[in-house]
Every structure is written in C-alpha cells, then in structure tokens.
Image (cartoon, rainbow, N blue to C red; front, side, top):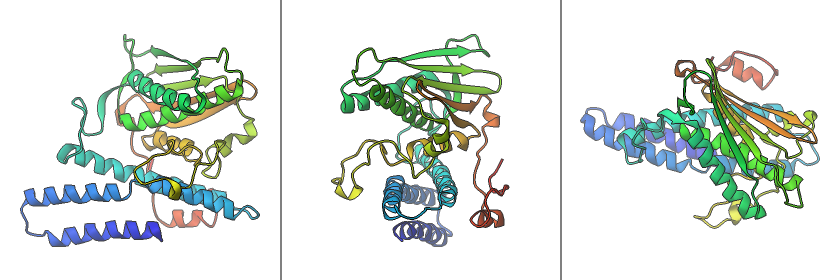
Length: 318
C-alpha cells in the first residue's frame, strides 16, 4: 500500500498537470513540468532500499513455507527495469533543462565518449574505501586494457557512466569481500584482475578474483532477490534520517540490479565460478551504440500469463 500510494500520487500529479496547463505558454509549462518530475524523482529515491527491506521481512515471515521465487523474480525484474528507464528519462530531462548538474562533456547523463578505465578506477576507489572500513585491509586491483579495434590504449564508448559505475562497484565489492574472507590471515592477498577489452561487436569488462568461488549449483541463487551472503543489514527504521548504510549490502539486490543495468541496453552480466579458487565476472556491452537498444518489459496478455504458466516468451522488447 505504501508504494501504491506513492506511485498513485505521482500519476495523479502528472494527469492534473496535463489538464491544468492547457493554453499556457510553453516556457511556463516547461519550467513547472521540470520542477514536477524532479519532485517525483525525489519522492521515489528510496524505493529500492524499501522494497529490499520488504523482501527481507517476507523471507523472515515465510521461513517455514515456500515463497514463489519465480513469480517474485519475474515481477521485480520488470518493476526495477521500468523504474530504471523512467528515472533515466527524468534525470536526462533535468540535466538538460533543470537544476541537476551535468558534466561538461556529457549530454545530460550520457557520456558520448565514456572512458571505461576511468569508471573502473573510480569504482575501485569506492569499493576499496568500503572494504577498508569493514576489514581494515584491501586487496590490490590490477587493470589491463586491450583494444582490438582502434590503435589506442584506452576503450571509450557512448554510455551512461552512473550505470557502469554501479555494475563494476558491485562486482568489485563482492570480489574484495570474498578475497579478504578467504584469506583470514590477511597476508599476501592475491590481487583482483580487471580486464577491459573492445572488439568489433562487444566491449567486455572481466573481473577475476581468488576469493574461493562457489559451487555451480548455487550460481542462479546469486541473482535471486531472496539471496545474500552478506550479514543482514539493520532495518531502515533504525537508521536515523539523513544517514546512509553500506550501499545495499546484505539486501540481496546488488547483483540482480547490476544484471538489469547491463541488460537494459542489450548487454549482459555473467558469472563463472571456480569453486575453491575464485570467480570470473563478465560485463558485456555493445561496441556500437546503434545496437545498444533499450530492452523493456511489455505489458499484455503474455505478461499476465507468466504468473500462471512459467517460461512463456514475448513479454520483453528486443
């Protein structure tokens, strides 16, 4: 009911805005519309964290009974992808016409020449700081770049830096935690290897760690919103307003959301575990921006039937 009321409020505000501003000047309409959607974006800032807290409470209340994981996963994948798309549109509009600041070389929130090494280095710094706070030790990260298309030592592409940073940060955070916990004496921590490659069709970021890996039988669990290997975080109700917690640590949404970010622009995120040794994670992106089309859920009869019959197709754009 909490989310329903918030989304209903936003929808009603948009409908009322449309009806109220018929005949007004374009300049007045544009300014008020920009302010309106900025407020809507702010209203829904904590949706992911609040939803994740609700999933944790659902797990606790259903300990002795089964949760329909397939239907939950199906709903949340579509819900978060829609949210991702809407917030991207709002952010792009506000950076171009509103008060949100944009980088000089960016077009809104899109960087037409995004330097992947810089994004990875920024994610390394953020993940290292977090790891140091928790364990007081940080494994080193080695970054290698291979460009098979251009005679360049860097890889650049048209992309959304915030999306890429989120994916790399989540993978590095998990790798650092696994490496530290798999080497309890904290001596001679093996480095994490990051490789960035560019080919004719694909750009790939590979992150390899020696954190012990997992059995292949648990691989699908990693992308479940009901699964997390991190300690359960404190309830959001116990955190003072204005303070933050470790970014979604223990909520079980980091990897599922990262995969959605990759797939949103026709890419993918895959994991290859080597049990007893470590994990290889791959972020696949499109080299050509014309192939990086949005992949969005379609709402129709097929979507409704998914809640009744599993495995139907035809309910996502291609």
